[in-house]
Amino acid sequence: MMIRITSLLLLVLAVTNVRAQYEKKEFIKGTDTLRYRLLYPVNYEAGKKYPLIMFLHGSGERGNNNEAQLVHGGKMFADSALRQQFPAFVVVPQCPNTDFWARLKRDPEKNDSLGKFRFDSNQPIGPSLSLVSQLLDSLVATGTVNKKQVYLGGLSMGGMGTFELLWRKPNFFAAAFPICGGGDPDKVSIYGKKFPIWIFHGDNDQVVPVSNSRLMRNALTNAGAKVKYTEYPGVGHNSWDNVFVEPGLLPWLFKQKK
Image 1 (cartoon, helix red, strand yellow):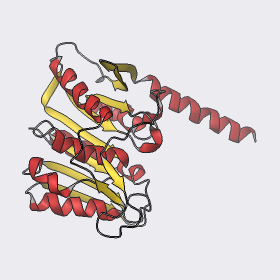
Image 2 (cartoon, one colour; image 1 turned 45 degrees about the vertical axis):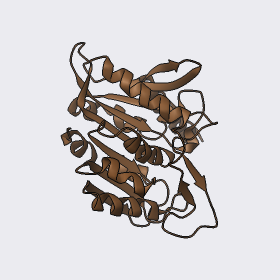
Image 3 (cartoon, rainbow, N blue to C red; image 1 turned 90 degrees about the vertical axis):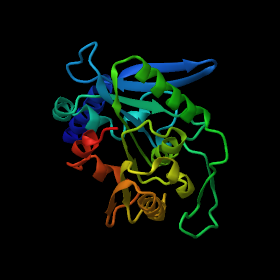
Image 4 (cartoon, rainbow, N blue to C red; image 1 turned 120 degrees about the horizontal axis):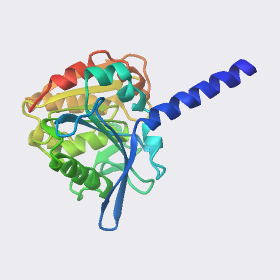
């Protein structure tokens, strides 16, 4: 019993230590507020320009505590060795419970390549994703971000938000890495040509069908994108656990420049 309690305390301390490395921030536009966490480059030097990674969390981490969004991925980006090797700003915003990163409709009766998800691209951008877009513009305007190395990624709902923000904000990002997400294949021509993207999914995903990522891979390939695709055999929805220990992810990401 004592060993179990000690292990739990160590886990809590580890999580707390990771969160402490990310500064709590708020981006306010009019009456709208986007809560986010910001990890500064290690040995940050004022006046120097650094790459920036925007990472979008999944639906289970929505809320307003400005903490839950670090549950998945926060540890990897805060890893001391990786921070030394790839110094960058890491921005992790939190979507409120009342919103969703991507514009979509669910249709459980559908059984085609999109499965139960229908990405409603005719709708205006959602309030939270709009704030993310404006926050990116604001951060780049500070002069501390290398405009040639702005990267976008996300998991599940965040993977869907990644695909949507790519066409909502074309020619802005240097590369992207959507995890177990999906998107509108009809929009890839807006951003896809020669665009570097690494798509991840588990082939046993019961929440977001792997067919969503396969469809986007095919559409992006046909659009002339530089597509990398990794599908994990036997892995369910939590394929992000595999992604966060992919030794090639950050080296690949930081090689990409506009």
